[in-house]
Image (cartoon, rainbow, N blue to C red; front, side, top):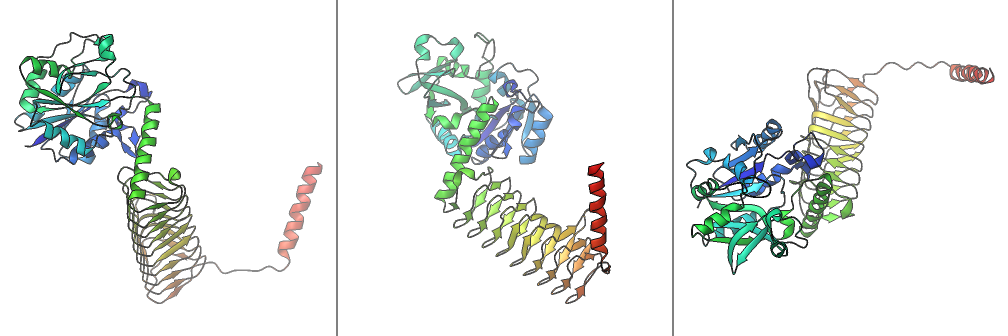
Length: 449
């Protein structure tokens, strides 16, 4: 049976004290809402609908960047969760099968849990995701009778006896599309908040003789983000999980608590990651690489056997082939470094191709930007670039060519050639000593005066 997903992402998140919509605050280097979208993607939904409100244009831009087929609908007034889901009614017209309602500020729901809810739908008309809370606090309570779910009571409306229940509501619901919207149409606002509660569909379903059931998950999966403190706690939880997965998958982390991952970081077995390494979005590191201390990687691919760092920065578009060496205080951006090439010290390589086994000396810079346009530099196989060479793009250095240290290269260098591009040195005997004596005397006179 097919399934569609509705993700609620309309809330302002006033407790975040931010102009940024709550669901766009980053967790694991990606906006919160993308965590829900990526979990949903694993169950292959027929349609994905995201309900936006506060900062809707910004949220829609992020959502479409992730899934251009996602449908965006707007909740202009925040009148409750049932009202929010109802905004997706037209977008889901004609969809066959079930609908799962998720939340853009609840990032830890696992695809396996969503599949369990779909399976449970074979036995129940409405399925609710619940969890046993260590501290139930202000969560809504799931009122059960045996294995059947009777109703969901919001904390504001619960009796003292109901507040003692520890089985709590996550807000995630699965039901047949047509039945879901039929039930939503019957929801009223007879509650303490005067809102349309999605949770009311359980009691309405039971009143019609329909069945409702509960799928339980770990409380951590249901963690919602409402404040900066909760976001920080969620980040710590996320990083702990990613570190544990990396270690379990055969990655060596020299000091796990100092390594930070993005949600999509992919690292192969037998890779070693040293202390204080940060992985931004879009990084893949193949097996057997070594990422040394204090390096920062984003949008980069590192192949088998490569060594990066310490203190290296790989920016989006950095492509490192096998056995490449990128050393301390080197920055690579939108550049391909071919097999065995070395960029070991204090260099910037941007918008470039570096051939196999080429060696770039300390302080090499590809001068790729003219103030308006970016230009490429091509360095051939086995070329040797002398220290402090400025390669003014667009420029090509042929295979096995050399550039002299301190050169400014503005023209193509043929294969096997030596290129020198620096001013002729002049030496003035004794002038250095006399100049320093004059300067020291001037300084002493200034201090005395």
